[in-house]
Image 1 (cartoon, helix red, strand yellow):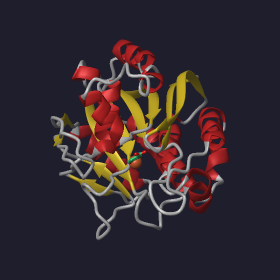
Image 2: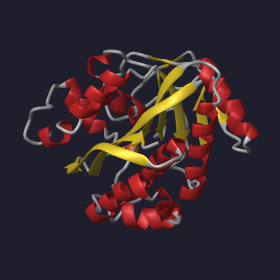
Image 3: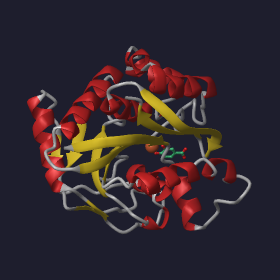
Image 4: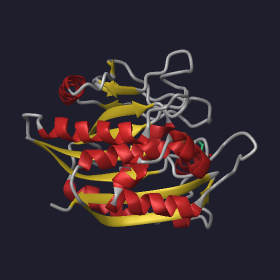
Length: 279
Ligand code: DHB
Ligand code: FE
Protein backbone atom coordinates (compact mmCIF):
# COMPACT_ATOMS: atom_id res chain seq x y z
CA UNK A 1 0.00 0.00 0.00
CA UNK A 2 1.14 3.54 -0.67
CA UNK A 3 1.62 5.69 2.40
CA UNK A 4 1.80 9.41 3.02
CA UNK A 5 5.01 10.10 4.94
CA UNK A 6 4.24 13.77 5.61
CA UNK A 7 3.67 17.09 3.94
CA UNK A 8 5.37 20.38 3.18
CA UNK A 9 3.62 23.68 2.47
CA UNK A 10 5.57 26.58 1.01
CA UNK A 11 5.11 29.85 -0.86
CA UNK A 12 6.12 29.78 -4.54
CA UNK A 13 7.09 33.34 -5.55
CA UNK A 14 8.88 33.68 -8.96
CA UNK A 15 11.59 35.93 -7.44
CA UNK A 16 12.71 32.91 -5.37
CA UNK A 17 13.41 31.07 -8.64
CA UNK A 18 15.47 34.01 -9.87
CA UNK A 19 17.36 34.13 -6.53
CA UNK A 20 18.16 30.39 -6.73
CA UNK A 21 19.33 30.75 -10.34
CA UNK A 22 21.75 33.50 -9.19
CA UNK A 23 22.79 31.73 -5.94
CA UNK A 24 21.64 34.64 -3.77
CA UNK A 25 20.61 32.41 -0.83
CA UNK A 26 23.18 34.06 1.49
CA UNK A 27 22.28 37.69 0.67
CA UNK A 28 20.83 39.76 3.52
CA UNK A 29 17.43 40.03 1.79
CA UNK A 30 17.16 36.30 1.10
CA UNK A 31 18.89 34.63 4.05
CA UNK A 32 15.98 34.68 6.54
CA UNK A 33 13.81 33.08 3.87
CA UNK A 34 16.23 30.41 2.59
CA UNK A 35 17.38 29.57 6.14
CA UNK A 36 13.94 28.00 6.62
CA UNK A 37 14.63 25.18 4.15
CA UNK A 38 17.67 23.08 5.27
CA UNK A 39 15.68 21.26 8.02
CA UNK A 40 13.08 20.33 5.41
CA UNK A 41 15.79 19.26 2.95
CA UNK A 42 17.32 17.06 5.66
CA UNK A 43 13.92 15.52 6.47
CA UNK A 44 13.29 14.75 2.77
CA UNK A 45 16.78 13.31 2.46
CA UNK A 46 16.06 11.02 5.42
CA UNK A 47 12.48 10.09 4.49
CA UNK A 48 13.18 9.50 0.76
CA UNK A 49 9.71 9.96 -0.72
CA UNK A 50 9.28 8.25 -4.09
CA UNK A 51 6.45 10.49 -5.29
CA UNK A 52 5.57 14.12 -4.52
CA UNK A 53 1.91 15.02 -5.01
CA UNK A 54 2.21 18.74 -5.74
CA UNK A 55 -0.94 20.75 -4.97
CA UNK A 56 -0.45 24.15 -6.57
CA UNK A 57 -2.19 26.68 -8.78
CA UNK A 58 -1.42 27.35 -12.42
CA UNK A 59 -0.95 31.06 -13.23
CA UNK A 60 -1.86 31.14 -16.90
CA UNK A 61 0.72 28.72 -18.35
CA UNK A 62 -1.24 25.48 -18.82
CA UNK A 63 -4.72 26.95 -18.30
CA UNK A 64 -5.89 30.40 -19.29
CA UNK A 65 -9.06 32.35 -18.62
CA UNK A 66 -10.78 30.84 -21.68
CA UNK A 67 -10.73 27.31 -20.22
CA UNK A 68 -10.21 26.94 -16.49
CA UNK A 69 -10.75 23.62 -14.72
CA UNK A 70 -11.54 23.97 -11.03
CA UNK A 71 -9.35 20.96 -10.21
CA UNK A 72 -6.92 19.36 -12.67
CA UNK A 73 -4.80 16.25 -12.07
CA UNK A 74 -1.70 15.42 -14.08
CA UNK A 75 -1.52 11.95 -15.69
CA UNK A 76 1.63 12.35 -17.76
CA UNK A 77 4.96 10.53 -17.84
CA UNK A 78 6.69 13.89 -17.52
CA UNK A 79 5.82 17.52 -16.90
CA UNK A 80 7.60 20.22 -18.85
CA UNK A 81 8.16 23.76 -17.64
CA UNK A 82 8.00 26.99 -19.63
CA UNK A 83 8.13 30.66 -18.69
CA UNK A 84 4.63 32.06 -18.24
CA UNK A 85 5.98 35.61 -18.22
CA UNK A 86 8.20 36.15 -15.17
CA UNK A 87 11.41 35.68 -17.16
CA UNK A 88 12.57 32.56 -15.30
CA UNK A 89 14.84 30.26 -17.31
CA UNK A 90 12.81 27.05 -17.90
CA UNK A 91 14.03 24.06 -15.89
CA UNK A 92 14.29 20.41 -17.00
CA UNK A 93 11.11 18.28 -17.10
CA UNK A 94 9.88 16.51 -13.97
CA UNK A 95 9.14 12.76 -14.08
CA UNK A 96 5.52 11.72 -13.50
CA UNK A 97 3.90 8.56 -12.12
CA UNK A 98 0.98 7.80 -14.48
CA UNK A 99 -0.01 4.69 -12.49
CA UNK A 100 -0.64 6.65 -9.30
CA UNK A 101 -2.22 9.47 -11.33
CA UNK A 102 -4.86 7.24 -12.88
CA UNK A 103 -5.59 5.55 -9.57
CA UNK A 104 -6.05 9.00 -8.00
CA UNK A 105 -8.28 10.22 -10.84
CA UNK A 106 -10.46 7.08 -10.72
CA UNK A 107 -10.81 7.32 -6.97
CA UNK A 108 -11.61 11.06 -7.01
CA UNK A 109 -14.26 10.72 -9.72
CA UNK A 110 -15.78 7.75 -7.86
CA UNK A 111 -15.95 10.05 -4.82
CA UNK A 112 -17.83 12.64 -6.92
CA UNK A 113 -14.93 15.05 -7.53
CA UNK A 114 -15.14 15.52 -11.29
CA UNK A 115 -11.53 16.50 -11.91
CA UNK A 116 -9.97 17.26 -15.29
CA UNK A 117 -7.38 14.62 -16.22
CA UNK A 118 -4.32 16.02 -18.02
CA UNK A 119 -2.15 13.66 -20.06
CA UNK A 120 -0.17 16.73 -21.04
CA UNK A 121 0.46 19.45 -18.49
CA UNK A 122 2.98 22.28 -18.45
CA UNK A 123 4.00 23.29 -14.95
CA UNK A 124 4.74 26.90 -14.00
CA UNK A 125 6.62 28.59 -11.12
CA UNK A 126 3.93 27.43 -8.69
CA UNK A 127 5.31 23.91 -9.21
CA UNK A 128 8.96 24.43 -10.17
CA UNK A 129 10.03 26.95 -7.51
CA UNK A 130 9.00 24.70 -4.58
CA UNK A 131 10.62 21.67 -6.26
CA UNK A 132 13.86 23.69 -6.52
CA UNK A 133 13.61 24.72 -2.86
CA UNK A 134 12.92 21.21 -1.61
CA UNK A 135 15.30 19.21 -3.85
CA UNK A 136 18.23 21.57 -4.52
CA UNK A 137 20.37 20.22 -7.34
CA UNK A 138 17.62 17.61 -7.90
CA UNK A 139 19.37 15.18 -5.57
CA UNK A 140 16.95 12.23 -5.03
CA UNK A 141 14.24 14.05 -6.95
CA UNK A 142 11.03 12.00 -6.61
CA UNK A 143 8.45 11.36 -9.30
CA UNK A 144 5.72 13.99 -9.29
CA UNK A 145 1.96 14.22 -9.56
CA UNK A 146 0.63 17.75 -10.06
CA UNK A 147 -2.83 18.78 -8.86
CA UNK A 148 -3.77 22.29 -9.93
CA UNK A 149 -6.60 24.22 -8.32
CA UNK A 150 -8.14 27.32 -9.85
CA UNK A 151 -7.21 30.41 -7.83
CA UNK A 152 -7.46 32.76 -10.81
CA UNK A 153 -10.83 32.80 -12.59
CA UNK A 154 -13.78 33.26 -10.23
CA UNK A 155 -15.81 31.43 -9.05
CA UNK A 156 -13.13 29.57 -7.08
CA UNK A 157 -13.84 26.38 -5.11
CA UNK A 158 -14.70 27.05 -1.48
CA UNK A 159 -12.11 26.33 1.22
CA UNK A 160 -14.47 23.62 2.48
CA UNK A 161 -14.55 21.96 -0.95
CA UNK A 162 -10.75 22.12 -1.15
CA UNK A 163 -10.36 20.49 2.25
CA UNK A 164 -12.77 17.71 1.27
CA UNK A 165 -10.94 17.11 -2.00
CA UNK A 166 -7.72 16.86 0.01
CA UNK A 167 -9.34 14.21 2.22
CA UNK A 168 -10.31 12.27 -0.93
CA UNK A 169 -6.71 12.55 -2.20
CA UNK A 170 -5.48 11.09 1.08
CA UNK A 171 -7.98 8.25 0.87
CA UNK A 172 -7.04 7.52 -2.76
CA UNK A 173 -3.32 7.34 -1.99
CA UNK A 174 -3.94 5.00 0.95
CA UNK A 175 -5.77 2.59 -1.37
CA UNK A 176 -3.03 2.46 -4.06
CA UNK A 177 -2.06 -1.23 -4.07
CA UNK A 178 1.69 -0.70 -4.57
CA UNK A 179 4.28 0.11 -1.88
CA UNK A 180 5.06 3.77 -2.41
CA UNK A 181 6.29 6.55 -0.13
CA UNK A 182 4.37 9.72 -0.94
CA UNK A 183 4.92 13.27 0.27
CA UNK A 184 2.20 15.89 -0.19
CA UNK A 185 3.29 19.40 -1.14
CA UNK A 186 1.15 22.52 -1.07
CA UNK A 187 2.42 25.63 -2.79
CA UNK A 188 1.07 29.16 -2.77
CA UNK A 189 0.24 32.00 -0.41
CA UNK A 190 0.46 33.23 2.09
CA UNK A 191 -1.08 36.71 2.00
CA UNK A 192 -0.41 38.79 -1.10
CA UNK A 193 -2.16 40.98 -3.61
CA UNK A 194 -0.35 41.83 -6.83
CA UNK A 195 -2.83 44.19 -8.46
CA UNK A 196 -5.45 46.85 -7.85
CA UNK A 197 -5.74 49.39 -5.05
CA UNK A 198 -4.46 47.01 -2.41
CA UNK A 199 -1.37 45.88 -4.40
CA UNK A 200 1.35 45.04 -1.88
CA UNK A 201 -1.14 44.07 0.84
CA UNK A 202 0.27 41.55 3.36
CA UNK A 203 -1.52 40.38 6.54
CA UNK A 204 1.02 38.90 8.97
CA UNK A 205 -1.50 38.16 11.73
CA UNK A 206 -3.81 36.34 9.35
CA UNK A 207 -0.92 34.32 7.90
CA UNK A 208 0.29 33.24 11.34
CA UNK A 209 -3.26 32.34 12.32
CA UNK A 210 -3.62 30.26 9.13
CA UNK A 211 -0.38 28.39 9.89
CA UNK A 212 -1.64 27.59 13.41
CA UNK A 213 -5.04 26.46 12.14
CA UNK A 214 -3.56 24.35 9.34
CA UNK A 215 -1.68 22.43 12.03
CA UNK A 216 -4.25 22.16 14.81
CA UNK A 217 -7.70 23.08 13.56
CA UNK A 218 -8.05 23.04 9.75
CA UNK A 219 -11.84 22.90 9.99
CA UNK A 220 -11.74 26.48 11.31
CA UNK A 221 -10.36 27.60 7.93
CA UNK A 222 -13.05 25.69 6.03
CA UNK A 223 -15.60 28.11 7.51
CA UNK A 224 -14.06 31.04 5.57
CA UNK A 225 -15.58 31.97 2.22
CA UNK A 226 -13.41 32.85 -0.78
CA UNK A 227 -14.56 36.44 -0.29
CA UNK A 228 -13.31 36.33 3.34
CA UNK A 229 -9.96 35.02 2.14
CA UNK A 230 -9.63 37.74 -0.51
CA UNK A 231 -10.42 40.34 2.16
CA UNK A 232 -8.04 38.91 4.77
CA UNK A 233 -5.22 37.54 2.60
CA UNK A 234 -5.45 39.57 -0.63
CA UNK A 235 -6.72 38.50 -4.03
CA UNK A 236 -3.74 36.16 -4.64
CA UNK A 237 -3.58 35.14 -0.97
CA UNK A 238 -6.48 32.80 -1.74
CA UNK A 239 -3.72 30.43 -2.84
CA UNK A 240 -3.80 29.27 0.80
CA UNK A 241 -6.58 26.89 -0.33
CA UNK A 242 -3.76 24.64 -1.60
CA UNK A 243 -2.57 24.35 2.04
CA UNK A 244 -6.07 23.26 3.08
CA UNK A 245 -6.09 20.58 0.36
CA UNK A 246 -2.74 19.30 1.62
CA UNK A 247 -4.01 19.26 5.20
CA UNK A 248 -7.09 17.31 4.14
CA UNK A 249 -4.85 14.64 2.58
CA UNK A 250 -3.12 14.08 5.95
CA UNK A 251 -6.55 13.35 7.46
CA UNK A 252 -5.80 12.77 11.19
CA UNK A 253 -3.95 14.93 13.74
CA UNK A 254 -0.47 16.11 12.73
CA UNK A 255 2.80 17.15 14.34
CA UNK A 256 4.55 20.26 13.07
CA UNK A 257 8.24 19.38 12.68
CA UNK A 258 9.40 22.74 11.35
CA UNK A 259 8.06 26.13 10.34
CA UNK A 260 9.27 29.48 9.05
CA UNK A 261 7.57 32.76 8.20
CA UNK A 262 9.22 35.80 6.68
CA UNK A 263 7.90 39.05 5.19
CA UNK A 264 8.14 40.35 2.66
CA UNK A 265 9.51 38.18 -0.09
CA UNK A 266 8.63 40.19 -3.17
CA UNK A 267 5.00 41.09 -2.40
CA UNK A 268 4.19 38.08 -0.30
CA UNK A 269 4.11 36.75 3.26
CA UNK A 270 6.32 33.68 2.77
CA UNK A 271 5.39 30.67 4.89
CA UNK A 272 6.82 27.17 5.31
CA UNK A 273 5.43 24.18 7.24
CA UNK A 274 6.69 20.61 7.59
CA UNK A 275 4.03 18.24 8.94
CA UNK A 276 3.95 14.59 9.87
CA UNK A 277 0.98 12.41 10.83
CA UNK A 278 0.76 12.25 14.62
CA UNK A 279 -0.78 8.76 14.66
C1 DHB B 1 4.33 36.77 -6.36
C2 DHB B 1 3.70 35.79 -5.57
C3 DHB B 1 3.02 34.73 -6.19
O1 DHB B 1 2.37 33.75 -5.52
C4 DHB B 1 3.01 34.63 -7.57
O2 DHB B 1 2.38 33.57 -8.11
C5 DHB B 1 3.60 35.61 -8.35
C6 DHB B 1 4.28 36.68 -7.74
C7 DHB B 1 5.07 37.92 -5.73
O3 DHB B 1 4.97 38.17 -4.53
O4 DHB B 1 5.85 38.57 -6.45
FE1 FE C 1 1.13 32.44 -6.98
